[in-house]
Length: 494
Ligand code: HEC
Image (tube, rainbow, N blue to C red; front, side, top):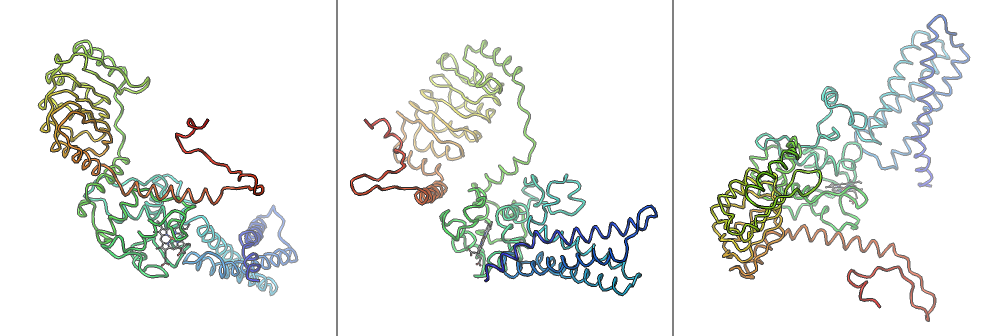
């Protein structure tokens, strides 16, 4: 019975178009009738159309009521939509009565009012289903600002204000994440679990089961706990079928809860720890105009000249980009700090740099600060020591470093902790100890992120097992199963 009622309730979105169409058409015909060239509506026709319109409006309101009682919607949008829907049905009935009594003077204003009510009701109904900013989110930014659309609801406008001194932690960092990942189900239109997350005040009220977070206690905050549950856990937020938070977003939310979940305060005041600062810097960068790429032809001409002058190998890394690989190794000890200064003219376009076996020393490494795009660096069998490694700090994109055969020790590795992207380090035949290498590896690995990925893989594997189809054909036959050999076993099989 309950299901049947809900079934009828779900006809509401279909039926609701009937009274809209009928009442709007009536208003149009009445307007047209005022114009002498168009035939006026007869009394009988008007009564017939009104009767249909009123019946349709009452039916739509009734079905809507069934849906609201049993369906997934709650919140102020629903309250407004429901009220306006009932008023529209009332208006349509009143129109029918007025027509019966031939109260000509009341008729026109009442019809206009009813059309206004049905328009407003329709607007809130649409906002409930599609989200409040469905209509405005694709408009040009200027129009949106004129209409007062909040910035978080503007499609594509997700970058942070560029200045940490003015960017607000909650309004500019935390709230846009929640808007994107949570508010569809925890907002004004729908508030699942009696929880709303569309404002700081609403979040403070918590949900059906109480507080959303304990300011300062990340692990004890339900909001964070639910986001860390395994992907297929039924309480996981957002639910597994919905777009998930990225690790960066999760870290930002944890940082905010950990720092007391403040409503007011700038990024600069909150003094984020380095990991968080990195994420924020990247987001701010995304909003920045991308620096124009150096012109490839000009770069190659300059590269050819330097290559001839220094006797080193310089090649473009691809056919369409200006990025270069440079190898000075052939010059052996002919290439030293002075030559590196000359090469620095090309600094910003060098991706790979091989200085192995050259005479480059600690002092020369200062030139590397011009090479902000550097990915790979070879310094093997040079005179470089611990003291020189500090000069690598500006190489924010460095992924691979070869220090084979240098005098570097564990002490020097500490400087490498400043390199966020460094993933491979070669220290064969140096003073580096296994313990020192281990310490750096631990520092450079985001164990928590890897654990989260592993948990995600485990959850996906459980999903695969649950989906897999298995056939057995009696005891004498082995089960027929679709399976993939684990990597590396393909070759071993006979
Ligand atoms: C697709 C819809 C959906 C999205 C998106 C979603 N939730 Fe939920 N959420 C629910 C439903 C349904 C419930 C109620 C059932 C339950 O408790 O699991 C709920 C309940 C909760 C509760 C428990 C409230 C209480 O007191 O019982 C918390 C906390 C929560 N969600 C946090 C979040 C956070 C944080 C996000 C965004 C990262 C989010 N949710 C995104 C659907 C959603």
